[in-house]
Amino acid sequence: MEDFDFEKSFRELEEINEYFRHENFNLEEALKKFERGLFLIKKCEKRLREIENKFEDVKKKFLEM
Image 1 (cartoon, rainbow, N blue to C red):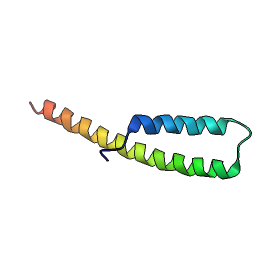
Image 2 (image 1 turned 135 degrees about the vertical axis):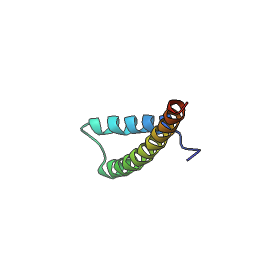
Image 3 (image 1 turned 90 degrees about the vertical axis):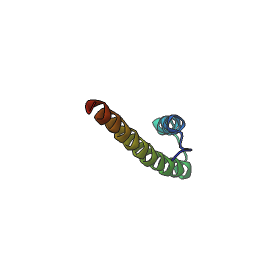
Image 4 (image 1 turned 45 degrees about the horizontal axis):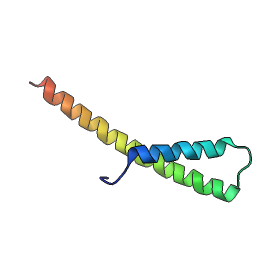
């Protein structure tokens, strides 16, 4: 997941969220954005778990010293 840009994906999720705050939106476009949002959420969750695991590894190393 080296080329995954968490910050860019998070910003895109914020834009999708803002899109749905408006009362008038196209249903077809909304479905595409909803699907894209779910995809981005899964990718972000996976990346956060990876980072959390790395933090835990670093913490364990320093506690063993």
